[in-house]
Image (cartoon, rainbow, N blue to C red; front, side, top):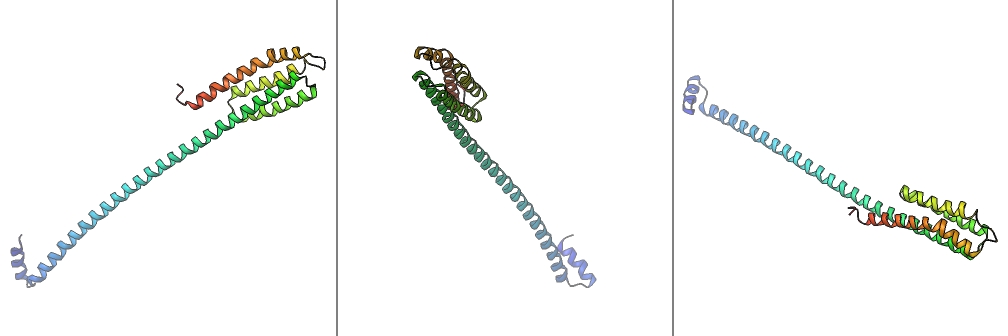
Length: 191
């Protein structure tokens, strides 16, 4: 029914037409406002969901970046600790060799071997198991093999021969392993 038809029916009932029209316009305006309100709520909820998704994605990205930085820092620290421990251990082996070849007595050699023991243990805390095993073998060769074969009458040539046969091959082996290990750490792709 159109507006004129409504006005005719209303006119028969004794209700002023303007009141009916105003009421009808009010109802129409309220319906439009309700539709606009619902549309605004839906848009706001969609915008809220989108903002939450973006915030969560940004948070995940920030966490990934932070974790990557923490891992990189830890890897750098670990490599520095490994290199420092390895070089300290190798320096102690060098001191043991010099003392052995200089004719140091058993007590001096035992003190140097004790340093080797401590450094071998420190190395085992930060280095891979294989490097730690090689360090234990080298320490054992110095402490238990060489020291049990020398006395105050062992000649310089005999001491050099002991080093060359019992310690030097192990030192070469641990050095080659360490070199390969540190080169792999420099080139994580493994190529």
